[in-house]
Length: 364
Image (cartoon, rainbow, N blue to C red; front, top):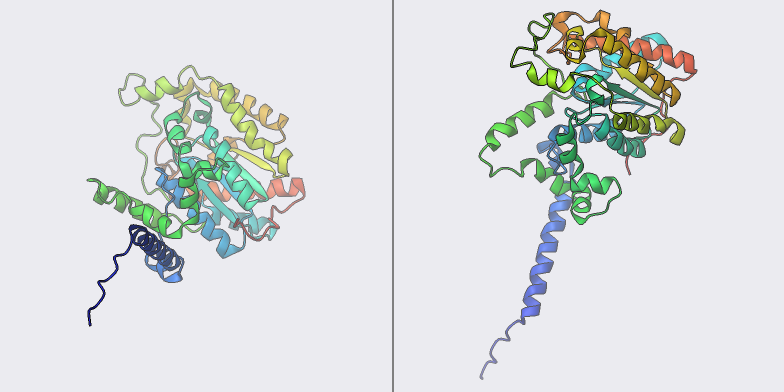
């Protein structure tokens, strides 16, 4: 009996088989990535943004809301917030004064200014609906061009643009794929500096608390000595902050944040970070700082916000509580946080509210 020769598979059949195989592998990987087992052995996640510290905060807040059923207060700002405010200490101080235990999260991200925060705040408000937004700022926030390079690169990210409502397939895939989010922290594994940069990321991820606080363990040196304009190490600061003027565009960014109260009823508290007094030498002295405070206070009040100047808490912070002229370290942050908690309790009494968020979830 003569056997018929085996029929050759058509090219279309081969291609379809390969496509179905890839779909099967992708679906299986995605299902595995969503299991608690993967979360336990690989808790690191990324959306592909160059700013990995923003990503740490983004996913830490997502986990915080899941664990606590929501968030009452979000604190927004730069690295000054990141290392300068411990939400747990702040919440405890508020509790001692009011008997109310607030859920407070620190969303301070280094390098971001009032310009970029006026955009990211929209994502946080739409997703989490906190009962109060605290935006922490300082004079550098209102210098034209300050932090522009970081802002441009940060906002160009496809995932961020997708979150902001500008649809693109790259952003959509990252947003919906748990497997991809678990892979992306390691995406630069072929780069020569991967073994140097990855440990830094892992340490910062570990050091960031569940409520978003990352302590700074450095101590500043010679902070009580005024900066010298003839010192080459200080020249860039004098150039950036000298002849200080408030950029109208940055006030426009601040207005966007303050408009939260009018647009959705979210109260906004603007806090001036208590930088070391020697910083004001860069901008032209304490008189320039006072003029800044007066301008900012009037602007905030006229736009429905509340302003807490640096003087409300800076007298409590010792010299050894600072890591440089701008930032607080792990010894100064609890002192400032305690003061903020007390100040917030005063505001709660004045506003006849407890700043508790009635929304119980922040997921989409």
